[in-house]
Length: 258
Image 1 (tube, rainbow, N blue to C red):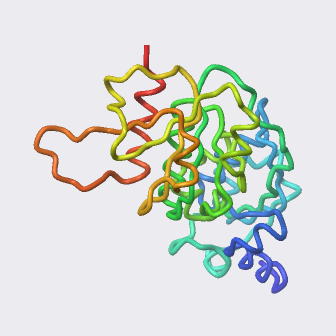
Image 2: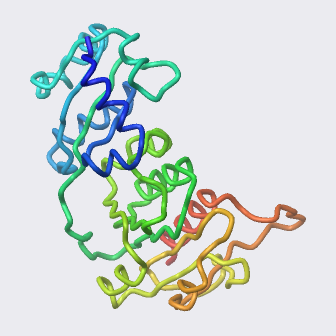
């Protein structure tokens, strides 16, 4: 059973201001919690730590191997309890309260790409971009102060556990990132940019992805060393591409440049 105080605390974490205040966030569902537990107990620890784990008896029995290192945090509950405190319409057997990593180290600079997200507002887009970064081995993802929360429930679900493996740093200005990595070129996705498929481009750098509706801000545009674009195909008529779709195409192209 979940107590009234626990219920109040867990439901407060639905909101970004309380996630920031307590440095805690929620992970829900068997798939996501499974990814979380593997990341915490694995050899390359994500830096996150368990605060509390709430699950049904069925989930505990079916996942005893995963649960064993975290049994001290486990509270057996019913599906109805999870429905009252979770964000999912249909509860999926387990919910975790997790402490955000206290790590503030920047990603180790190695050949590859960094992403800078400039004012993205859709948590589904952000989660998908983290999943793309995870797939293509992006070194780190930096988020502007007004980018949506990478550890919000919708972003976590969309990212399918990528947030536990990708180096994410929030509340960063592009200037700060450039100062950390002064040797890296800065590329931006803009409508009037050079064809990303045919242009000669660097083998590593910082790729800036702008807001879904407004694109990259004017004050950031002047910091770009390269302006790139995805040309439409023959007969293409769409006005633009979704931010996450565009990121996927750009990252796939840049990471496979010879």
